[in-house]
Length: 310
Ligand code: NDP
Ligand code: OXD
Image (cartoon, rainbow, N blue to C red; front, side, top):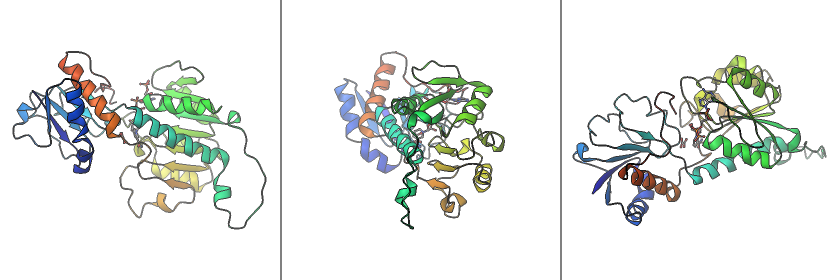
């Protein structure tokens, strides 16, 4: 019998307490899932969300894997006490949610919807927006989420420039990498979507210099991580009219403090880290499949490269 410990906020456990044991049984895995273990040395698997206070993994001497409920692992990946394999969450529900959020906010800016939703002067302006085929969207990050969003936007005819650390070939997407690729993408894009993990290399990626490469009316849509963008440089660019708008879902401090200038800035839209949620029905299957693989001595899915940081 394996022992799995679930470290997350109590409300998260409520979502998994029935489905996870049921799916383990369905998969033929003899395992118990608990939220407290008197003897950490008896634990085989740790299911982890950053809302849990767990910091010291040292006592979990028998643990075969730490399975993150989140896609982004920046709050755990650098933990020196974590020596076990770490898997991040890749799940269809998470991906679908992200695609819907990114497509929705991209279309808002592409179609100029705000002009008609907020039109206090009842101005009849029949100017039509361009077609999607006339707009360039840069997708910074072409991983599980970025690639799905890029494909969905390409299916609507947007011209997509994908940018990643390593070179890629994705049908229908012009894939770039490296510093020159980033500059080319930022200079050409009308809308820039940031779906990168937070790592030492991506922190402040969009700083004053790189924001300066963007078109004056370009829009940033950031569901990745707050630290990807230099906040002060972004506000300065927006105030100077050097950028059109920023739609931000993620922030350096969450919840975003009440006095943060993003809340009231006329060119900033704040959404409260809701771009995509890990949903228990799909995510529990991913957890169970990884436990099954570990028990069978097979390779784990979605393994984090600790050196790379994602
Ligand atoms: P992946 O690990 O699948 O993809 C990451 C992508 O970023 C890869 O294409 C990778 O390049 C690229 N990348 C990483 N470092 C660099 C770098 N230094 N330069 C250029 N490209 C780089 O992650 P996901 O797509 O699953 O998730 C992305 C992020 O989305 C998460 O880390 C998390 O922060 C955020 N997220 C936000 C949510 C929300 O609700 N707001 C929900 C879920 C996730 P390569 O392909 O070459 O390795
Ligand atoms: C995640 C997130 O990383 O919700 O899963 O941001």
